Length: 145
Image (cartoon, rainbow, N blue to C red; front, side, top):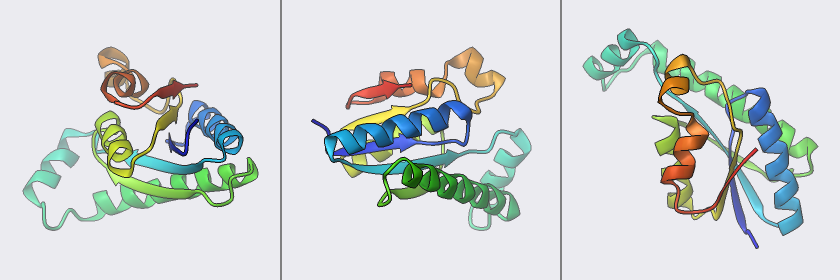
């Protein structure tokens, strides 16, 4: 059925539920599973600093990337606990929905399993959740938990 499952994980409770469901599906299908954590700048000041200092984004990017790594590593421990010891984890920066969809296409994942609500802001609530955007943009099936 599925051979390669992408499980975007943001550290939220719904994200953890989706990650566990992705591990269950991966075990049932004997598929490989990949965890993806996506971070992005939310503040206008951070965004403007990134645009001005593209070659040297400085401590803001480093702090966010480090936190993303911690979340991804924690996601790997959850996957291992759920029976998926060989799970790989990646951290990317960008708009979450587009980054998830692009990563899935680039790496040939045949299904994306993600939580219905994550750590999004009020902006996400008003403009549509990441899961809603992913379902509209992805060319592969999307399972929203």
